[in-house]
Image 1 (cartoon, helix red, strand yellow):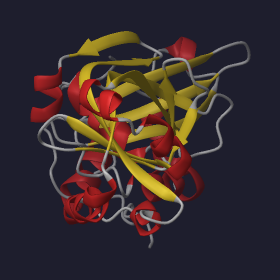
Image 2 (cartoon, rainbow, N blue to C red; image 1 turned 180 degrees about the horizontal axis):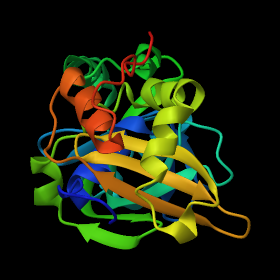
Image 3 (tube, one colour; image 1 turned 180 degrees about the vertical axis):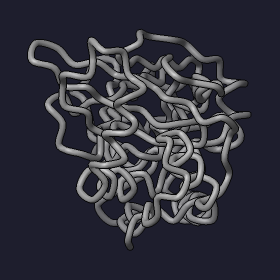
Length: 255
């Protein structure tokens, strides 16, 4: 980590944030073709609630399978908000036992999930979509720095980054409207990396990640804030200080 004065997000926080950002995921069920899920929500009891096509639910809804569960792996892909040469920022694999949510409990479960986060996919529950429960046993995240496991207890105790919903607009704003700030940030990079194209890759409460697209390879670098930030005003201030431009205005993304 270059230029960092704070630690980055924990492995558990990275997984939680990736789960919130990923639009769709691949559900691999033992002995079946992968299924695309339109919702993946981790509840406090360690169950990942998944929205799947109704025929997938029906295919696993037998008394024996409902009791014992089916071995399954959910693969989530965290894509960069910007159009980068390599768009994948990280991959997350969640392994556990899969059970269908009984038809009589679909509406109550959908309401419980909506109370925690109002996913649009919940509107299709009971029509073209059903819900399943993946009881987690293990989790692994992999990115350009390598792969790391996280235990379920740590995952449940962690929170997604508070800026995950606004990250896309911030990065687009930096990339299109603030080449001056990116140029300032690039001065903190080693000389060997300053020849490539510097793009904003991610931003969170601990710092900003940059993607340096070189002629032959890409490199990802994290620049850490001096302190962890918890609100938008502090985030903008920390980014300006990191760039060495404490009086630079207009960093808040429009819209």
